[in-house]
Image 1: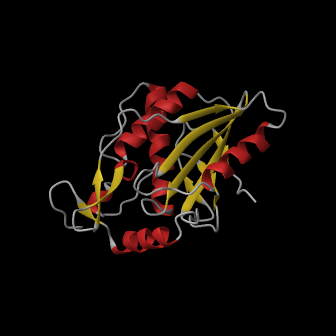
Image 2: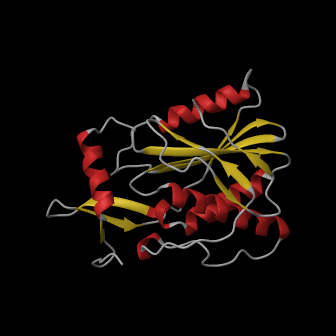
Length: 222
């Protein structure tokens, strides 16, 4: 377990390496990693956005804030943003909604991140048709990786399923980053491929299961 003092935590060795690399190249987006999942079929948009809000509330990685201590060292704390909301982009009016969505996602993943100011992640739903939408996730590698990305997909499916059925979502199902203890669990039926501004960082594919998740596939951006 990572040692900490009060509500400030030191960076792990891996995080510190990424921190220093980003400082050396502040205009680089090489550590941005992202994926999108394409939904085909009926998706309750309001319920899905509510599921994303619940997901971000649960996920430690979405609450990380970096600060410079008095001695010049960098620390991190966990501070949820009560004003955070997922991004909803309706592109159905575009001549080529899919191309417009991919351009929007590429623009986001290629944007350098200020580790002190953020935002360190993006959660967005891009609507490209009456029965087609893309769930886009982008995270800086200092707070997330392929494993955490697959967990986010699985947990969101669990929450969405519970909300659509009107049943309680299992509490405490999302692992705590601050405990540094990995865990695994079931999730929605989906298949994802991932891409980044420079190179793939997340696994080429991941599969999870859940009955109320819409039909989903994904494709990597060129």
